Each structure stands twice: as C-alpha cells, then as structure tokens.
Image 1 (cartoon, rainbow over the protein chains, first blue to last red):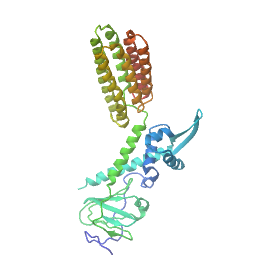
Image 2: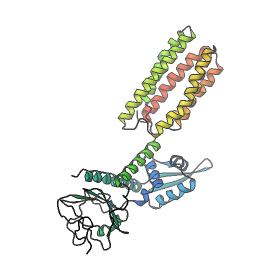
Image 3: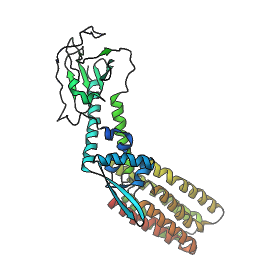
Image 4: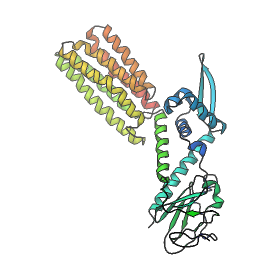
Length: 129
Length: 267
C-alpha cells in the first residue's frame, strides 16, 4: 500500500465521504460539452444566441475566420442538432443562414451553468479556512 | 500535486482547497477519488459542473485509484476558475458584438433633433458669420452632452457596457471624419467661406455616421447616408438654404431616426 508523501497516511481503502451534488441532477451537466467548448464553435453558438439568425458572411466577419473553418465547425454543430441551416437565394446569389435550435440554446445554457458552477465552487473553496 | 497518470490531476491551490482538472475525469465519475477524513482540515474538490465534494475536517486525501503516484513538485495546472471566467468573458463579448442592439440612445437622438430645430431659426437670424458659427457649434456641444448622457443611461438601464467592443469600434470609425470636419470648418471659416459649412458638416457627419454604423444597428448607417445626400443637396442649392437644410437634417432626420432606434432597438 502506498503512502501519501506529505502525510504518510495510506492511500487506499474504502470511501469515507460520498460525492455530493450541489444542486439538481448533474448526470448530464457534469460532462463538459466538448462540442461547444471549442473556441470557434463557442463563438458561433454565442453569436447565434444573440440573434434570430445570421448569414454565413455575417458569422465569418464576426468571428474572423475563413470560409472553410466556418463550414467545418458549423457542420459539426448542425450534425449535433445545435444549429439549423437554411439555404436560399437572394436574387441569384446563394445565401446560407444559420439559427440556433432549442437544443443548441439548452446546450449553451448548460455550458454557462457549468462555467458558473466551477467559478462558484472554486471561490467557495478558496474562502474555506 | 498528486497525479494519477491518465486518470486525474489534483492540484493544491491552497492548503484548504483541492481542484481537480476534470477533463477526462468527468467521464470517470465512478473512479472519482473518495476522501478519508483525518486530522482537522477541510478539503474541497471541485469536480466540474455541479459537483462539490466536501470532506469535513480533513487533512488527508485518500485516493482510491489503482495506479497513482505522488509528484510534489509538478507544475501547477492553469487555474480552473480563470479558464471558466475567460470562457464567460468570451461568450459575453461575442454576444455583445453580434447583438442587434446599440447603446446609442434613440431618445437622445430625438432630443438632439429637437434642439437643432429650435436653434435653426435663431442661427438664421444671426448677422455675423462668427455668431452664426458660434450658434451651431454651441448646438453641437449641447447635442454631444445630450447624446452622451442618454447613452450612459441606456447602457445602465440595459446592463450593457457603455464602451463594449461594438461601441469602441463605432467611436473609432466615427472619429476620423469628425476630426476632418473640425479642421475643415476652421479652415473654411478662416478663409472666408462660411457658406460652405452646412454642406461640409452634413457630408462629413454623414460619412462619420455611415462608417460607425457598420458596427451598429441598421438605422444608423441609413441615417448617415441621408445626411450625405442632404450634404450634396446643400452644395447644389444657394447658401441661404443652409440653415433650413441643417434643420431638416440635424433636426428632423435625428428626430425620425431617433424614434426608429428608440422603438426598435432598446430605447
């Protein structure tokens, strides 16, 4: 059995303190949403959360990314059901419009809750004597 | 820092607190270490989302993992809280930039329009160019104070940063044309061409507003375009029309677009 270097106390054995959820059912919330956590996709979802819809060019300008980069990340969000894509023509020019789905909005809300929980818990921990 | 390779990282931020870098651990909740109380301290484990594990009166963390080793001098992992704060800041900044909203106050713009309508007949009655310029410059200063005050109130009311990303870009875009307007005004006045000033003011104010409008709500660049059109008209019409065109633009146009912004874009 190994010992804790600092304290010399054995580092194995049965659980003594159970895990305690702070609030609610954390089974889904505990998992960090990797799909949104990536910076470009986080920006994409955040921008769409502030607008009913945005065109491809508007998003590209806002996030300052290339066409290819935006396409790849938008497709991942679309496949996950977070973003809905509408393709239309303005005159003869094709236009791709994105909007956030309810699923995407919920995912962003969960992600925000996740971040706030981390901040809150860390601050609480730092204030312990 | 205690490290179980490939499974968890735990870093002591303070003696009283433990933070778990939960990246892979979040998928291994069943393997999460449990705590064994010993002498006298509290240990808090921050495990991501909504889990806080508190071991009351602990000073010893007992890990139940199959492979672990203790590495006291490992580099500190970046603070979880800092990352979370940075992510929240990024989300907020992105939403602010993307939002169809402006801190430019519609009611402030309308008030500026009302002031211009009041001043136009007075300015028209002025006999000396210096007094005429003073009347309009005074109006500009008062208008600036009105729009600044109204915008501060709007930002406070809507809990929005007065100088957020979009607003800073707006100001940076507006400033060059406004500066040129100031310089040209002084030059034209000094060389005895005050009759050109209304057209110059409308053209350059319109240019400034159009440039800034790229970072604001749709009515703003449209208003800038209207000013430019009136500026062109002012160049074509006799100088005696100057004050009435000023009243039409700085007065009525501000009133109209101020109402539009007020109704459609948050007051």
